[in-house]
Image 1 (cartoon, helix red, strand yellow):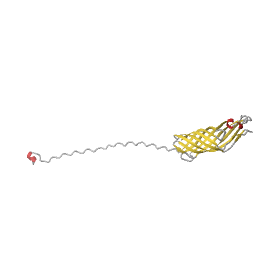
Image 2: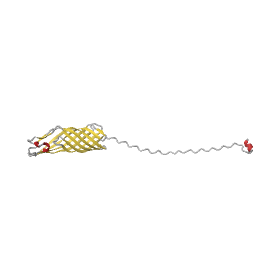
Image 3: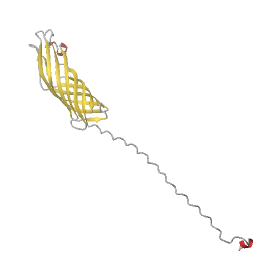
Image 4: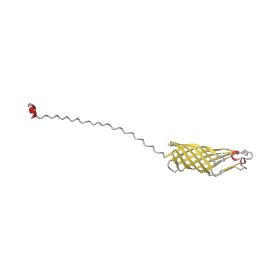
Length: 230
């Protein structure tokens, strides 16, 4: 009515409503490919449980001659971790006494003029079995038992004439072996112990007091360097 009074020619039809805006188009989902999986770490290398050993060193024994016999040694063996025995070694050595003269046994054993002398050479094969191994880092300690057998050659010189003998030699003993390993590949070892001769000899020139008699026990010392493989 107000519109008519103000403007008699006004439009009286309903005011058209504003058309609703069309809905926006659906969004297209964008998917990115999953990143490639990170390479898995290689499995840890299992700890070595056993290994072969081969090496060489020097050894000295005290029951063979009046002085220590010393010489080189080569050996092969097997090492086991956490088992009994812990190490098995087979070695060969050639040991020399040097010349046994008045300074070693005294003039009373070499005649009035002290002109007699002797020398001893031992070729020996030795088997060692280490019972158990205590390890702390790269250092290990093993008590071992040893058995050896070989040929002892004795050469003597005297105004009455030279003499030569080839004799069987055998001994059994025990030693303590300390080792230091480098990256489980190289092993440096030192051994100290004692052996009991299985045979006993008395060496003398004819008509003279004994030049030397095998004692009941003797010292055993050794140093070695070994390589473990594979």
